[in-house]
Image 1 (cartoon, rainbow, N blue to C red):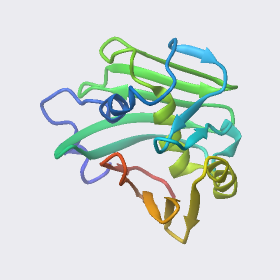
Image 2: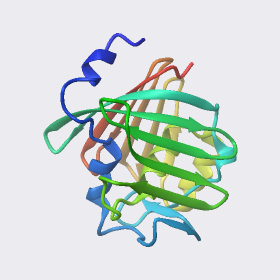
Image 3: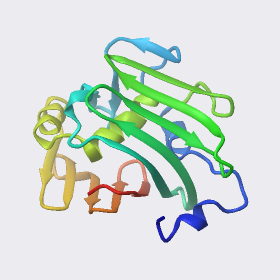
Length: 197
């Protein structure tokens, strides 16, 4: 059990991080049905159209709870998600404090699907998958995909940085137990706690 687990299971309903961030992109990305198979993408800047990579690009499979702390528009949020991701699919289950499912997202074989009883259909799941790929996908594949949309990927031992020209858009710091993503353009940060070793 992670040392901070108890604080994530506090007395209010745990809100999904992805819902909060997804709402900021409603006017800038492709919309449509809850389940669709077509060219899936997310705008990482107002003009940088990132085509989602296939599931085979993941660096390492995972099947774990991820405890999430986030900061967005001067507000802090705590939440939890169960993530199962491998070469065939990415599946995320969003849970409340009692362990009940609040929403489910899946991506695989060119199809993305999102369903929830409490989260609006207007949430764009492409942005959830894009951020996930930036954190956990093979850097060679990411570098090519980002170059195709006018961005540059810089990597080091524990970091990834995504730039448009000289402007730093994303900063990602990774360790065995923590992944921190900062989106300087959209103004959000989140930290994932899990077993990423």
